[in-house]
Length: 160
Image (tube, rainbow, N blue to C red; front, side, top):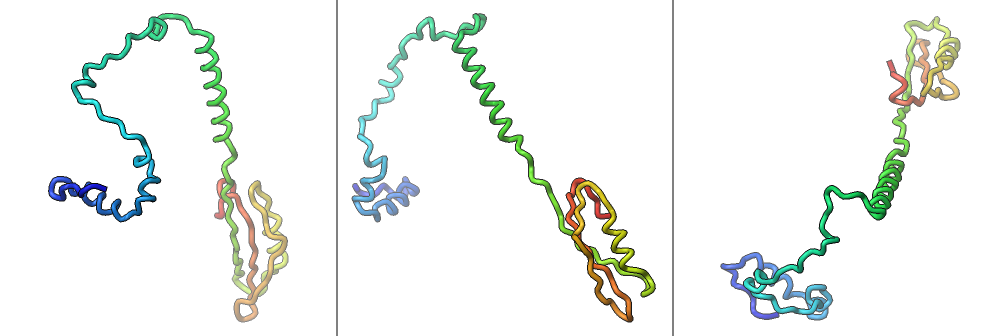
């Protein structure tokens, strides 16, 4: 590398140069900018004087003309591609489901929990799947509670 740029005039370029100079010459040679052929820059005056070749009559847009076969084929191709993209996006979104565990506690010990559990499992709704069975656990003083679980689809079933 050549001498570093002026730090006061080009501080960011100087920082880049300090980083780049630490790499081995073999590594620097592998960079694409270093491997690209160097071309002489044309002066700004020469760039202004260059003129683009005149457009052919075929290249000019005909705003009121008819569609060509190529235009029709390209439009049909774009329409097919848009439909294919739409079909890809139209995949079914995942269904939001929740697993809920309820603890049903009776007011007194004289409630028949087996009957109550069977009544709860008898509730049928679209999007509601009960666990296969419930279990009874003691709370206190001879009172038991029912623990029962279900899987619900959030959009179809309310937990109220």
